Structures are given as C-alpha cells and as structure tokens.
Image (cartoon, rainbow, N blue to C red; front, side, top):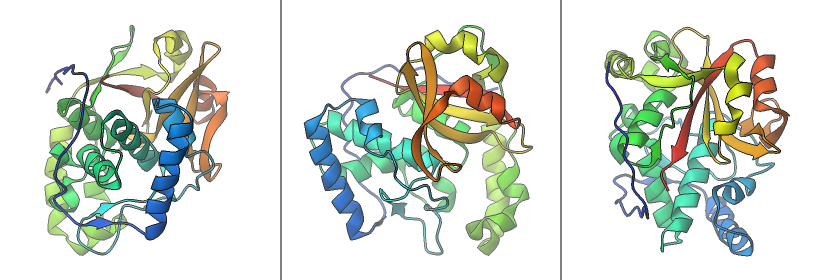
Length: 275
C-alpha cells in the first residue's frame, strides 16, 4: 500500500497560474467582494471564514456541466465538498498578500484538481480520499493521527461501475476505463480513520476548522459527506452544507450523535490545514 508522506510548511502563499477558463456569474464576484468586507470586520481565521457561508443554499452537482472541464466558481450555492473547498481557498487567500478574485481562483484550482492542474474531467479529485491524499502531497493539509484510529484503505469503484449516472462519463465511455485505473490507484492509499463508535472518546484531539470526511458503508464509495469541525464546550459539532437543511448550517447535535443517527455512516477521516 502507498504510504502518504507528511509535509510541514508555514507561511504558504499560492501563486499558480490558472490553466483553464474560469466559469462563474457576475453574482459570484459580488459575493466575493462582500466576503472581503465581512473578513475585514472580523478576523482572518478559518472558522470566521466558514461562518460567512451560513444559510447559503445547498445545491448539488454545481461542478458538472455539458462543456469542457473548467474551473467552476459558485459562491452562491454550495454542496458539502464545495463548502469545504471554497472556505479553505478563501482562508488561504486571506493569509496571502493578494486579496483578489484571481488569487482565490488560483488557490481553488490547486485544491480541487490533481496536482493543481486542469486536464479534463478526470483531473478533478472526484473521490475525497484522493482529495485528502493529493492535498497532503501539495502541502496544503496534513492528516493528524488520532490515538486509537484504525487503518482505512479505500475500496472505490462507484464511478466506473455507474458511468450512466455521470453525464461526462456517459458521454465519453472511454473515460470509464480511465476512471477505473484512477480508482485502482486510490485503492492503494492508506489512511487512519475513527469508527463512529469511538468518536466520542477521540473528541479531545480535534481542533476547530479540522476537515471532516465521513466514511460510508455504501459499496464502491469512500466518503459520503464532508464538513468542518467546530469545537464547543469540549464537544465536536459539524459545520457543513447540509442536504437535509438545504443550506449551510452548524448541526445542533454533536458530530457523534449525527453519525450515530445515520446508519450508513461508518466513521470519519480528518484533515488539518498546514499552518
């Protein structure tokens, strides 16, 4: 199994060139400018950045379309992954000395695509375990080892075995075999996860702003949902774009209780931004 290597850096400033056209609406730049005003009135922390999106509507599938792969920016509507990506990209932009829409887009591209390069639909990090592993290799995050965590090897195959469910794969059948090869590579990675039955005992090891990836019992998938950790009074809560609430919320129940309520959730993987 491939072992992921830990990279530790500080003072990150991203200045990659965008290598593809950006797709967004004028309203997205309005939201971006509103965010800059919001940030100046508070602080540049990760959690303050995330709070900007509270009550933003939940909409799935905003990254897919019928055109060539482009960097799709949508700050008006979020799903669980784009909430995490946009929050991280805005936060890292604030840490840099370039508070511009172009810099935000450059950082977002680096986070969302394998090695930060857009090279068609298959270059996007579709499976969140690969997202975690590749962003670790890019020195954006590390994967903290929580005491007592268990070995976790992805067993992904869902996209290549359900090609008709993905417009791009349905239109390009040859991409299905390529996706199968990508899945095999992902399945060589190894992570450390916390079973949901042990989560309550592990809460002291979480920091506010940690990335939460909820693993699933669904065959062929690795992660069913994502969000950020919010630590309050010693308990961990999930800050996420909720398909149940239809908007970005901080769950009223603890993360432990949230996972216990949903039978198909098996546990969590965690990531933490490199400071």
